[in-house]
Length: 367
Image (tube, rainbow, N blue to C red; front, side):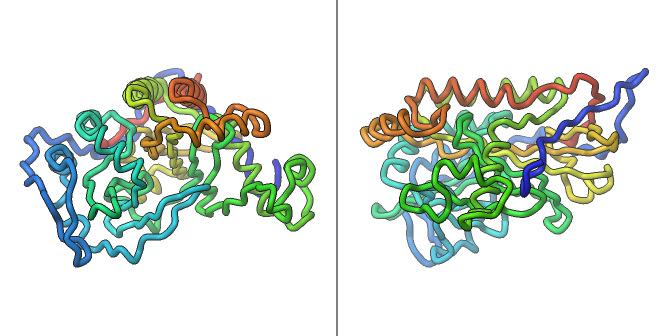
């Protein structure tokens, strides 16, 4: 394996002569009660500031469906916003109760206004992998959205969680590995004005030696390669659920002619069922038992969320496409929305393949 990033997981479950029942888990039955109505907001007091609220006729329904309390942003402070990850990350803040507040550009704000009604209708379907939005607010100078956090699950014990991988996947060479074995991987981008990180040829030459001060770039590059080329496994029924969700979500996004969105993937791994249960991982809809290459049992839980789906095609993207077509590795992220949708969907469906020999895990109902 290359230094710094492990080989892709090659997992295979054992074929049983008779179907083996998974250990019985205490399932939480889905509530049959109608969601209690939540008051539609016109404005809201946040961190001592009165903010205008947009489209809350629709977001209030989502807060009701997913039982989000009226004061879910009571601990948020604007001073906690900091620049997000990635090449052009917007300011973000993470709340202790599992929400993300993101500052929106004017373009993202306009896209969210356009999408609100149909987006909330799609998000009301619990099968969707789109990140859930619960509030859209601002003061006509700055705009914000409050949303769920893919890597936060109510009921999980943070001290017991073991994140094997965090991925940011676009279905192109911009795919990246963000975390491995509970350790974040620093982003070290390649730029013509940053030769101390690596010139373009160094990605090929410097993967196994420390030269030009670019060991961090080497690890980041290896993680990107793994994120794009690596395969992950799930059971047949889980793959069917995943494929249908991706297909429906991409169809929705394609109708708004947006691009540049990502699928965030969190993979938790545990050696025993008890460890998975104690960490709360068994609550994932995508929870399965496999065997690793050494024949040892491994319990996996996947967590998904499609994010950053407000970007429209514009003149800046046209120029970027012309430049990247000549210089950047293929496939590109900067392509027109229809091509982006096809590329995103086909690549991600191919990434998750069915265990040829498996036995299903009974899973706890996931909201």
